[in-house]
Length: 183
Image (cartoon, rainbow, N blue to C red):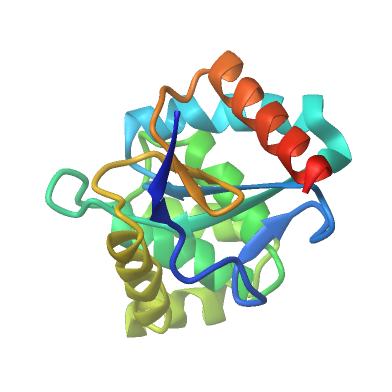
């Protein structure tokens, strides 16, 4: 279920977008693409997992836009990062997954408006590609970590080589929490 040879590179650090305590016994990292239908499916599953696991789980999201298949994924990732610069990464992350069928530039600006962002700054950041390098860094860290599709999950730094249904993720989280307690 866990691939001992596929490790998260770099490990989770201060530059990452994380929900939950750094002291949580389990850290779940997702490499995702906002336009990927499988990531859209995983979005709801991760939300449920977070609700079920509470303080035992820290969730980290890294961008892995598959631009060959998903033409709007990269700008959507940049939009999430631009929103993050204004303290609203997770709100934009959720908005993008909840509206996967509408990720064109005018949609992104509408979401920024709805979230109360400084829309002029947001638009300027998107137009200038201000966060394109950050998205590329996430993507390249995924490549170094053995990611070749989305969504790809890592639990406590090890790639999960199994499905991403709720039961599989819960089993993996429980196993990781148990092994950490015994460590």
